Length: 81
Image 1 (cartoon, rainbow, N blue to C red):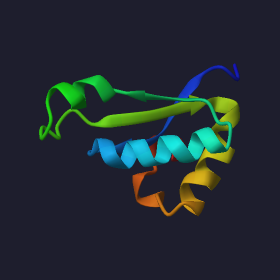
Image 2: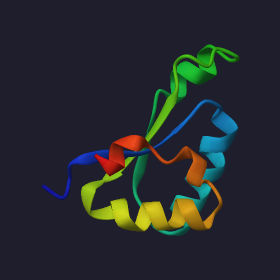
Image 3: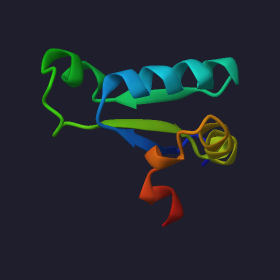
């Protein structure tokens, strides 16, 4: 059950996702950024959206890191469901 992937953040722009990726790597939190390739192939098209997912067991740490880094505006509504 701990391996279930949960969306913790979503982005419109690749640059924001790249910055947060670096921060999560430094904290040793495994993650996946979904739709990253679509954003690179179709630059300027924001409708695709980037989703950052982590394992269920890492959600609390990921939220803390995202918030501490000032990226709380990107937190997904899905984590509060």
